[in-house]
Image (cartoon, rainbow, N blue to C red; front, side, top):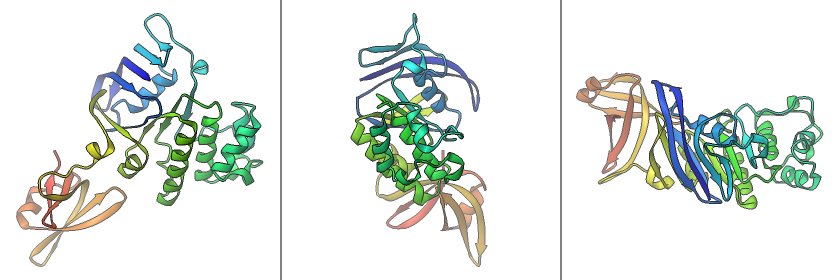
Length: 285
């Protein structure tokens, strides 16, 4: 059981705010943290890792990591941290990067085998692709068999095919090691595939907390689907208008009428939904 009750003043996307989080996480959970940029997600991970100060309490099982009297230093917290920028030692080989954390060669070999990196163990990071570097970073984070694995958008720079491959490897490691995992992500498909719990932060506060289905599936009434996207363009074609909408990594075209075209603003967030298989577009609140 992980109990987190922390507070920290931050300068967020809309000025000064309080990061105020009170939650309990069960052992073995895979928790996705999501929400607007600047809402405090990365700061929360850094506080859990001991890389930033905060007021409050953090308790992992019977171990107290933070209270009003003491702060456990990062090196004494049994955590793994996977950064966006890999943070590998450039002068060390892949294997040496892992053994720097823990001299357990058997464990290093096992992790490299799971992530299909065994043949690259004597290579240095500058000779690896982005996906390979991120796999090394993930293996290194698992070398101390962490009680808590923290990941800050670890796959955001990778192409869709590599993202899917690494998502599968992350899930394999999470299950095999029984690690409690917290990951910052903005990718709905990634969250749905990996997490069993989703926590949404906004301006430093938890505004939603539930299963991926509860949080991500936003259909209601007789709607068959509902997606959020950005309106990129509206093109007039004869008597109809076509809205160009970015949804995730894809662009879609939706036919709209003149009234809708005049009510929409380019660049705004919108909701694309359908009833009886006839798509409609509405401004997203």
